Structures are given as structure tokens and as C-alpha cells.
Image (cartoon, rainbow, N blue to C red; front, top):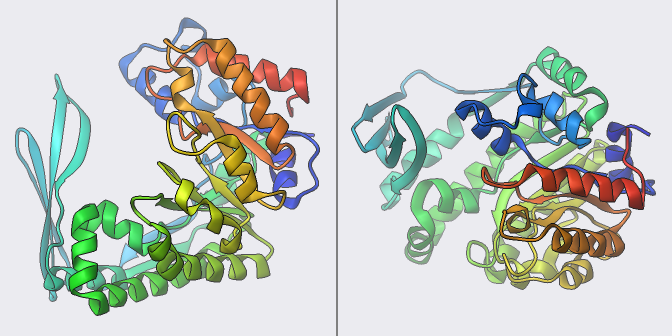
Length: 368
């Protein structure tokens, strides 16, 4: 069985084995850019490195949907300063601006993070609603076909859809405190924004379902702090259920990305009607144990990842990582796509990835 075949079989519930599918892109890109790849990987492509480590790959074919903003009365301006960037967007509804803090090493920008969020008022939220209503999508089947053929036997193509409107409000538009202040003071306007996000999701699904992709991801970043149970039940569960039902009717699979402390929202996982959950991270990185995660997903949901990124750091012993991996396999196989929650860091030890490959091969055999 190939990695691609096993990947799909796990979602279909017909697999007998575990797929080892860590996300290595950040590590690979970091070392390629700095010319610090280990000698054995020099001159290799990303896919060559995955092959050398005997790993499956998850998102290399997340292409084939083109996005654009409808109507021409939109202006985007970017102002570059020595230590920060200001991004301005202007529509007939008004103007918003985001300030990013930039960290530079010599001539390379190594960090670009929001320092001042663009939405603090209802009027600024109306600009965001205008922007979301403009978002349109079309498919490019040839782009998807070429990417899927390049990935080949290494994994079933998985495509990103969109995060929930609520977590986007936190991550992109308002920040965490700003989101909850806005929701408390102006709930009707926040719900208008979320309705615009639902309409956007429908347009995106219309395009996505024109492609032969079978597995989709919702980059929700749900966790205790972003989406505590009252928020999750009111604003996220209905969205997940609606998207899952539509994709299932079309014979597709879909999973959500939960990271950070998530123990309080674990009991709602099976209510989502989603097929799987990605990136749940056990203690001591986050606040849940393997056993608590297993109780939440039961035998019906696929779990992606589970191995803690800290265990791949130099100060953590490899034997502890392998013991934890054995426990994860014992608890979750065969409904398990084993990976690193949610990526190996730039300073992680790639040798430990290979050690997990050897362990999985010993326990159940690595897919080809």
C-alpha cells in the first residue's frame, strides 16, 4: 500500500496501519534559505527530503483555487518603515490599517507579526464585511492536477479551505481582547460579519467541489482561549456541521485545526460531525493528555499529529519521544495520521524524525 492509499484508507475507516505524516516545510525552508541543511540533504528538493526520511506529506497539493476581490474600487497601500510595515485598505465603506512589527537579520526579514490590529470600531468592521463580500473563487483544475501528480504516492492531497470567521476576527482583525469587547458591545454587527464569512465559505466550497480533492482542512485554530464552550457552541459548531454535511454529501472528508490549550472544548469534538481533528497537543505543551483526547474522539474520528514539537528539541531524549509515540499508536491506531503538533521547529532535530520513521516501520510497517 502506498502512502497515498493509506492516507485515504484511514479517512475511509478501512486502514490497518498508521501513516507517519509530519509537517517539515518550516524546518526545510529555514535551512535551505540559510544553507544549513545537513550534508546528506544538500541538493535535494522538499519532496526528496520527505522521501529520504520515509514520511508522507500533507499539504503539498493545496492549490487549484484562485482567489480575487470583486470590483475595482479597492485600494491597497503598503508603507515600509525600518522596523514596521503599515498595510492600508480602502473601500467605499472606509479605510482600515494594520501595523506589522518587522524583525530583520542583515537583509532578511525573519519575523512579520501584527502589532496593531485594524478593527477597533463598528465602522472599521463594516470595511471588513465589505472586503469579505468581495472575495471570489474559481478553480484551476490543471494546477491541482499537476501538483497532485508531483506529490504522487507520497500522500492524498489535502486542501486548505478557510478558518472560522470568529477565529479570523481574533487572528487578523481585532486581536483577542478586541474581539470580545466588540462582541459584548456590538453583537448584532459581529453576527453580520460572521454571516458574511458564511457566505464566503459557500462560495469557496462551490469552487472546491469542482476539484477532485478528497480531503479538506479548516484552519480554525480553535482552543480554550479563542473559542471557549459558549462561543464554540453558538458560532463554530453550526458552521462545522453545515460544512461537514455538505462535503460528506459530495463524498469528501474534512478536518479542523485545534491548537493550544483545548481540554475544555474536547467534549464537543464529535458534535462537529467532522471526520478528523488536526494538531491537538498533549501535556506538557498544552493542557490535555492522550487519554483525554482519546475519550473525546472515540473510535469514530481520525486524529492527525499528537507528537509534541518540544520532544524534537535537542534537550529532550529520543527514547522519551519514542515511548510517547508507542503510547499514541497503541491508543489511536488505526484512526491515526501520526505527525508533529503542529510542526517541527527550525531548531528541531531531524534525526528524531527518522527515529520515528524506524519505530513506525517496526510496529506496523511504513507505507511505500
